[in-house]
Image 1 (cartoon, rainbow, N blue to C red):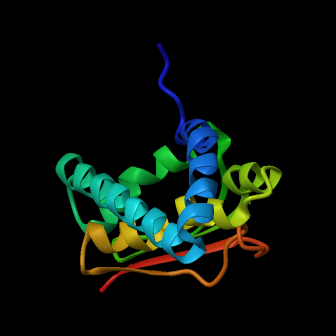
Image 2: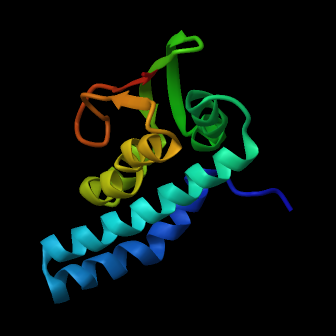
Length: 152
């Protein structure tokens, strides 16, 4: 059986997670619900980083590179590479099927929490020497996502 792309997993997970999140917001309020979701995303990102650390050799940036195909699989992202060397990986995402999915659901804020907010958490979890600068995302209305990872 062929494994699902990360995009397909996100779509399936959102079928139950989104209604659950809406109920938690009603019961506990938006601030508490957002806090709980962000804590879950942080835990998930730490697990991804730990798996990358075990399975990918090299620097924190190399470990990050090993994860990118997972997020881009299934034509999920239209990426424009800018810099890819030993100290920096910079790229622009010009098309994002994650954003399209959550916009179609009318939930780009939720989508940003479960997808876009994963990026800085994952970056920190991969290594203290790795930084991410990103000023905009498609999910939050930007023309593109500008990823600039650098090793300190």
